Length: 222
Image (cartoon, rainbow, N blue to C red; front, side):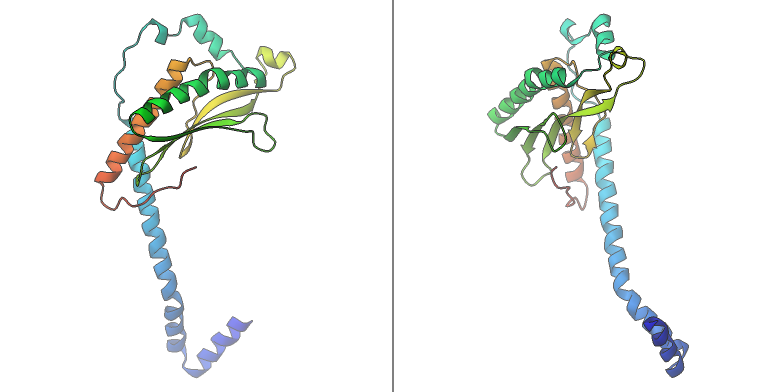
């Protein structure tokens, strides 16, 4: 109502020119807002492009021994395993945390400031998660987390036929979110390998980001 009366008043006084001038004046501040939004979006997309490129680069080659290759029976067992709370907790305590601890200790020996935490369950959850944080000074920190994610059991599995409705996956989370992989039934050495692969990709990302102009955009740590 008020806007309509104001518009009518300007039309009665100075006509169309007054209305046009008022529209330009009122819209000018929003043009600056839109400019900064576009600039921020552009920089964020560039950061994502560097991250994707660093992920696509090959990590350092590593020799594969007999212990690194799963036999077909072990591989099939892993594919058919739909673990519950107890097995998942045991996996985190006996495999995942020791693997992260060894990596953290080695990084500390090489001068890095590293934090490793085993965090309690959040509200409504039965299991906590593991958090490895490597401080990188003014650069973006390296975050590697292992979260137990609960899913519905497929109907064709033995676990479903035995009356169980859910199972867990141990998924890797980086700063940008879940990587979609499952560390369940990995050995300690395989978990260490996954951590180092992600750490190397993060260092590649930092290198690409530093070499690019206007690389001041950083995301907050999780």
